[in-house]
Image (cartoon, rainbow, N blue to C red; front, top):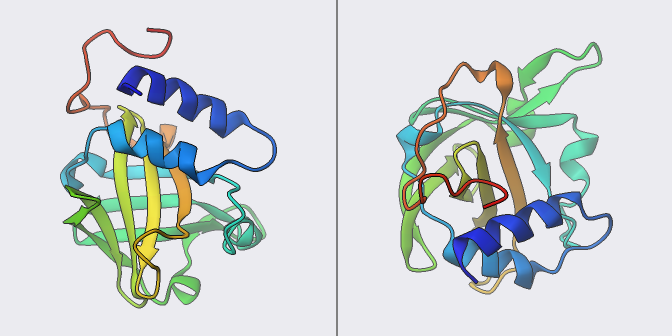
Length: 176
């Protein structure tokens, strides 16, 4: 699979009703470009892939909207909506907030969110300049998983400008 096929399959999987095979997500992950923490700054709207992981559906119940990265050392992993629809950082659920680091995962160094109060790591790779694929990992998770797979799309209100994706081919966006 090349990066163009991976992006196409990623889009297909985000629209799929029902279960997604983690093997398909692993194949996508394997060819996507890595991310540097400073490239991720801004607000991101999140979604998940239903792989049958025990966390599937839990964040939705908590009103999860996405994540916000003000700086590498100021990350808000659980931006949720309250009863009136306002966004807030759910530090109770997350047991604090987080920071961004470059961490090796599956043989590559990529941006990883490290939670302050939990032994949890969210690893990221670029799908395109406004979309990230994430894999949640942490203490107690075997090397082969099961992992929780999710994605982030740059929020329109983030104010962060889209940047070039490392490893991307100019003009090779969707439909290419």
